[in-house]
Amino acid sequence: MDRALILASVSFLLAVVWGPLLIRILRHYKIGKRIRISGPSEHKSKMGTPTMGGLMIVVPVFLITVVLNIYNLLGRTLIGRSILVPLGVLLIYALIGAIDDLAGVRGVRRGLGLTARRKLLWEIPLTLAIATFMLITDLQFAGQVGVPGIARMVNVGWLWVPIAAFLILWSANAVNLTDGLDGLAGIIVASAFAGYGVIARLQGQFYLIRFCFTVVGASFAFLWYNAHPAQMFMGDTGSLALGATLGTVALMTGQWLLLPIVILIPLAETLSVVIQVLYFKYTKRRFGQGRRVFKMSPLHHHFELMGWSETQVVQRFWLVEILAVMAGVALALL
Image (tube, rainbow, N blue to C red; front, side, top):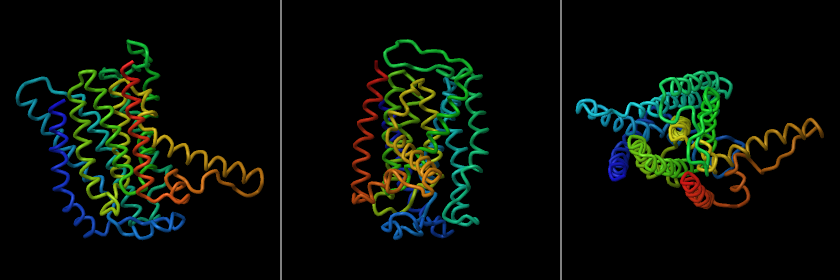
């Protein structure tokens, strides 16, 4: 645990130092956020703020993880090769997110990025391949699930592959939907990784806990520049990558049943979008005019339009998230 906390500090320092340079690079190449006209009017002032800020997290996490593995290899000690799985997921989804961010800035669908269908055409086969690889390489807890109150893991066999792929995909897109307010996605992700880091510590997965807290440190550094008013946005480069990696970490601990609890806020954000879309389509078909359950989705915009300030939404959502993470860790102890 002590090394994990040290790595969090190192990751924080590297990311903080790397942040100003990244902001200058993004500004130089005019990679700035485009704001939806239909969004809250207060967000129009954010137009042009550098996006793809997720690189501020991805780069330090990648460098630290690689350096640690090289050190172990040269020292002829047991290398934690399993940590290359979440690292690989982080890089793959960061690449997909970066392509989406660039398409949103410079593509024909400016402000929107790639279509959901096009992203899924990449994400689904890649995620199925990752889940299959985890199972056939006999990664710890692959093919198993922890159930609160049951001491031993339950084996689910090959059924685990589609479940694992779905969880990674859902986690990636849930965090992506959460990324809409200054500081919101960053603090939610940091809290969730800290929770699973504690679970990994209880299981003795020392490589995994170090990886988790490396992400926590880098996420805190990102929040240094993303706090309201934000100097940069995470973008899909960060939100997709961190969400998918979080789902992968949950699978590696075997405690993936707890993921909806640990990321309760992204779950609520996702449900708000699903409910809004389904209800709108149903009422349009039934009454000829679509109706809405929420003033706007995802959920954080609903509360903004109710009169909460952006800072209030972020702080209150974070309080709920912290309690959810604590509940998830407690259930893992049963």
